[in-house]
Length: 287
Image (cartoon, rainbow, N blue to C red):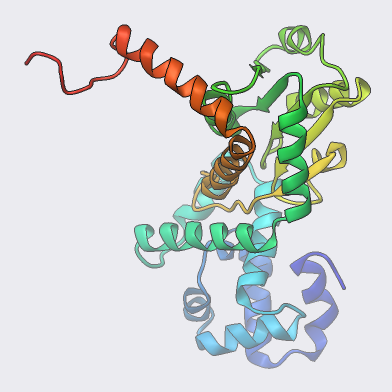
C-alpha cells in the first residue's frame, strides 16, 4: 500500500467516480489546507456531500476520513515551515476553534492511551527506578514537557535537565553518562537535530534510552531502548502536546508508585522546607 495520500490518489485515480475525482483534484492542489478541514468542510469546498468525502477516503484505501486527514497532517508537519503552517490554517474556514481544538486533544489522548505499548511503558518504569541518574532531553516546544518531567522527577531521582541550546554545553552535561543511567528524550515534529546528536552520544555510552515521540518513523525512535508513542497534531502552527504531557504524567506516577515510602519521606521533608521559607501561601499569612 502506498504511504502517502498523493501516491494513493495516483494509484486509484482512474477508477474513481466523477465526484471522487473532484475531491482528489482539490486535495492535490490544496493538501495543506485540507489537512485542517473536516469532511463536511472539504465536501462543501468540492461541492459534494460529506458522505461522498467519507466514501472517497475508503475508495483510496483509508479506513476512514480521520486516517486520511492524519496522513495529510504527517505530510504537512514534516514539510512545511511554521509560517507555511500558519498560512494553511488561516485558509481554513470551518467551525469554532475551541470545539475543534478540544475535540482533537481528546481524540489524541484516547488514541495514545489505546495504542501505547504497555510492555515498553513498564520497561521504562523499571529502568527509571534502577537508574543511577536520569537525563531529560527536550528542545524547543518539547522543552516544556521536559521541564515538567524534570520538576516532578527531581523530588525522587537524581535528574539532569540537559540544556541543548549550545552543543558544547550539551556534551559537557552528558560527559559522565554511562550504562547505569537513563535518558528520557522528548521530540516531536519539527524534530530537533540537537536531541538526535545527544542520543547518538548517549547510545555510544550504552545508556538506556526512553524515546517519547509521535511514531516509529521519528528519528529518535531508532535510538530507543523503550519507545513511547504519543499522538500529536496541529491546529495551526502550534503542535498540541496534550497527549505527550499526559503520557509523561502517567510515567512519573507509575514510577513513583514503585517507591512510595521514599516519595512520602522526600515530600514530607520538602513540605517542611517550603513552610519554613514560605515558598507557598498557606492561608496563615497576615492580610
